[in-house]
Image (tube, rainbow, N blue to C red; front, side, top):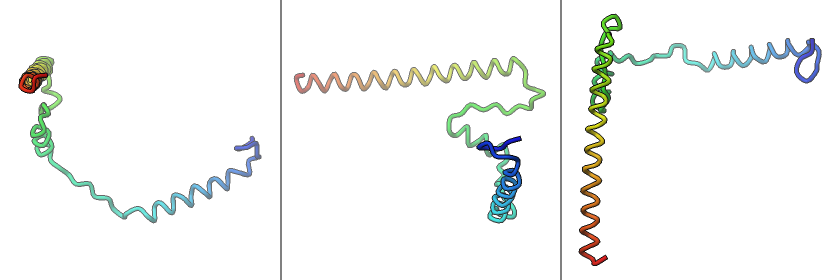
Length: 106
């Protein structure tokens, strides 16, 4: 069997040594213990809700199609409300620009 570049099997021990050396260096540089801060689900959900994300906190065994459908309905309503708000803002900007153009005679 030939290795990279058409060499014979002689490359395998050198590759193994290089990999072992790289791993040893990485393990020496890695912290002995990595601590990942734990946040309770309630804290995460509250944080998401504060940012306007609709969340659904239901155990999987209690999640029914009716719950999913209701969630999707609420989500669609929210999107429509946001679109209506954006249309209202754009209408006010348009009216302001038109009034400004009329004021300067453009």
